[in-house]
Length: 100
Image 1 (cartoon, rainbow, N blue to C red):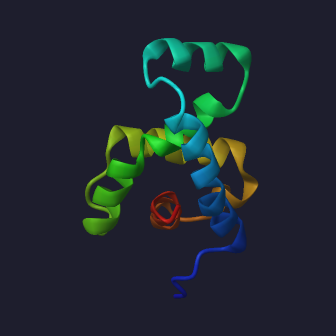
Image 2 (cartoon, rainbow, N blue to C red):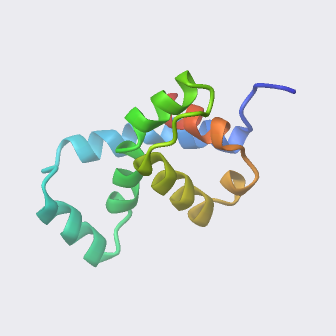
């Protein structure tokens, strides 16, 4: 089985630095998360994926045995919002989250 990520997942990984830059410049407090969620912007969605990095690292390092709640939320979000993520394995998505 090939370990190469589909092109769509690579694009996801490449888009994470831009999201991280915009997230890093904002407050990590509840007020910014609440305002972005209520305004309908994608910054709250990007936050879900960014906050899953530590869980993704544990998942990859444990070969899928450790599944954190933040990773589960990010996997669910990615599959709901991106067609290419629907066909990817959990491991491929976790690796894409880490590849930013």
